[in-house]
Length: 129
Length: 475
Image 1 (cartoon, rainbow over the protein chains, first blue to last red):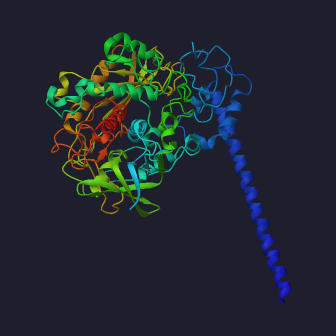
Image 2 (tube, chains in turn green, orange):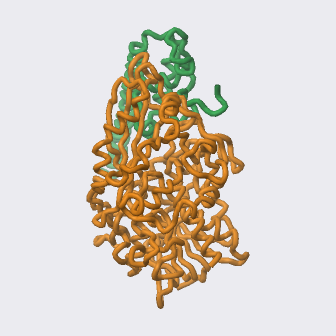
Image 3 (spheres, each protein chain N blue to C red):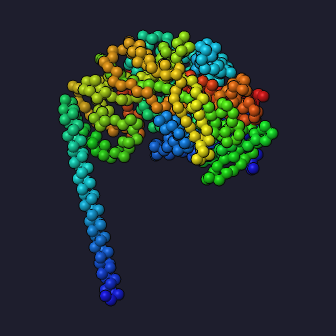
């Protein structure tokens, strides 16, 4: 093979591999995104089933699930961990309202001591009521 | 050997800080102090960026020959003040007189009255929140800050146990401090406080390391005290793996009870007591489901202290215990009963055993080798009846079930490896924490404790360090 032809072939093969790689990465990202989306939908469904006795403000579950996804890397830092259902309740005004199941429940903020500072609805600070 | 320092301090945690606080108050303008800290300097924002690093370096800094028994501490500027939970009870008078009163353990060469004024000073610096009018401790001054709010179960326990149940004194303030520490908001993750509320050396005493008379070198692992003619002349430390030697007129070891003992051993300043008797309290935590009573509602992570099992004739035969009631958020996963949960901890004292020890690791002499072969029979007898103690403690509460009870791996305290004693044959340092044989060498920290009482050691080790510096200045 002449040198020019060899170079053309090498570049072509390289580009083909690159495209394949890029393609593979794109496919991987798409699959991951779909898996994450499925996982989020599963979590939403799980929470709605678990707390079907509560009247939830619109998007309470959706906002929580989105925050779980956003803060997933920090979850391992929460000492002793916390089941996601409990974290959901702690992220709403459920306990601030005395755990009254008859009251509408609204999302307050993602409960994680290292994400949302000083949001522990179970503590009563000096100066609070 | 280089440098010519008035004082060289190994370590930068509680003991070092309170020693330096007193020393610098009276030192001349031209005094030269060298602080050598094994770990790096990581201020609060850096700690928050990598919270998992807080304890990792400590775990790698020694060889644990008996890994079933962990030892937890933080190395770096500020030492274990960076990871503690800020529980600051005093000891009781009886803790200093175990041998005289109960025929067990040893008496300390200091007593409650010797430390009272120093405890007050430490509490002021830490801005401790505690119950001035209702406390198990004889006090000459009120606590600097009012106590935290009891949890809902605490209120019932107080009604039932009256003068043996109290608000826990805590270096987690109820009001913002002048240094800018915000009030504790009860996040319940005190190992690394998200808002930097709990007292640490870095947020409460960092000015010491910024004093123009103080030079601080981090990532410097002190290995040996150099001596000549029975006097300390300086220290050898490793920096980037290379040894360096600095001269000093006074040497102070404040590097925690593992490293202090290790340094003495490497300095040929061993003896029958150095590194022997390594001990800490043993505790058990119970998770309790309550019937119709909500838990929580307190204003900080640990809200109550129970003294119903602490002191009394029983200590002649088994360990006394301090009770903690916890307010950290741990829900009960049942509809309608989410908050009906209480965690309590019983912290039993232990007595030193000579086979529990710190040595020079044969594979890596730059690190201590630590072996713990078990708690004393004295502590075990008490632990064996923890269920009875628990039943008595919980009797005033509507208990649905005790869900679990486990013995904890560590209390994150390390004690008794360089004990103090009036008799040089019985200890390593005297009542002023001066080494019996090398009279310009001080050894600080909870390693000097002759016994391991139920009370958390930090407040007392700080008071002892403050006192040691004052006695040094006076004499």
